[in-house]
Length: 524
Image (tube, rainbow, N blue to C red; front, side, top):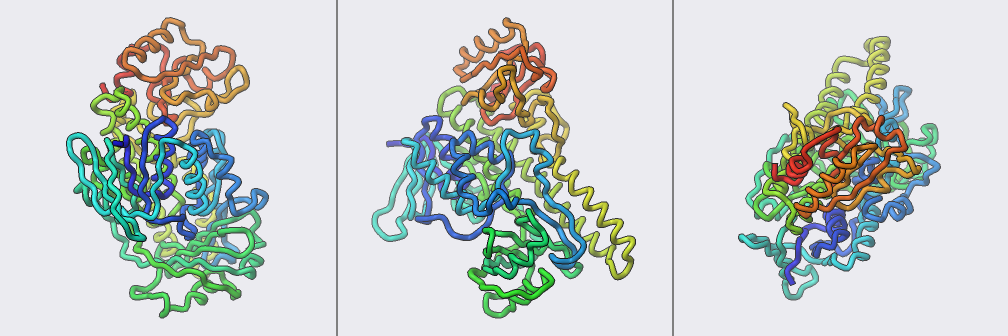
């Protein structure tokens, strides 16, 4: 049987895409080389926006139940200077500040636990097939579809999967990306990094002075703006640690215990469980689509674990691409809809890397070069206080949006970006705010699987026009009418067209419904 979509890579992004498509009834095969999730704690910080995806995927409760740190402890972050236990520290990545603009709370758990939840959810969907223990070795496409060949790691005959579309979610060294002839742009920081996974009850006790904190960034003058980054895996004894190391460092020629003691600022007993290395670089695929092949997640973009952007960006790729593939398979996508995946998602990652990750490295480098408590304590402390205040603003400023996208109303000189601002106002290209309706329900509980038209005291004729035009285009449209709440005042419009990924396609009072829909589905 020819599948609708074949996905190479069954990590969190590939599985999220499979669930998104499977819930829409699309036939999906996922090829994954590992039989079980790898027990390496990465990709832990999940934003409120990501938890909205898990809500719609039907596995938010399962994800929260899988967390390894009790809710009573908290999942906050902290930045410190010199050592983790120094007197100079402030709260970092305070995502709770933007909570009112999202439907769900954020979460923290290791990537392998997240992946296990998604595997279980995918297994519940009859149209999703997860083929584990198989490594994809070859992918090719023609005018009608994509063919992927996968070799079982335990031996035996190859598995060949034919599908209408293929998506590479197969990591930074993506075979799909290379087979599709998609090149990368790299911004190499020329730093070798180490990842340590270790256990220490003594460190857990030392960190008791910072209750509610689960991840820690340490700035040190010697690192020239790069971080020593520590995080809890559970509440008790398990941790991970990232830091720059000298070129040529191996698992056997470096004193990692001494490195940890220097970063924390105190000696403690520990047991190393894992030593791994990676190159600090930012890489961006120059295209996200080549014909019937697409890339998503680390196959499309990769960066250092600065700020917890990676896995969340990958999930947003999956959600953006899923509804567009569904529309193409359902026959209601315009000729520009699939191309809009790249037009929207690539600039957002470029902005994330430029405006947040690399900007943070530059700012930290300038700070540690210019200020030192032993050189001028007063100046250092004044600047440290300013940085603490600025950390709040960065949380508000990270607001990925699609202004200027070819499939949303209006225009923007800068185009889609990760930098914006959080507002409840419904703005074309921006995430929908979770308003409460007159019956007490949240609009997120009323959104349909396709497009949704919020009619907030709108004229009946305007509503009927959207219904008629959507039917003529075979566009799935749910109408949510509400005139008894303050939603109209909060969103700033009586008509709001919401995309299947909960972004606003258009908002206003009156419009040519056919033109609005044409733009939203790639016919404009």
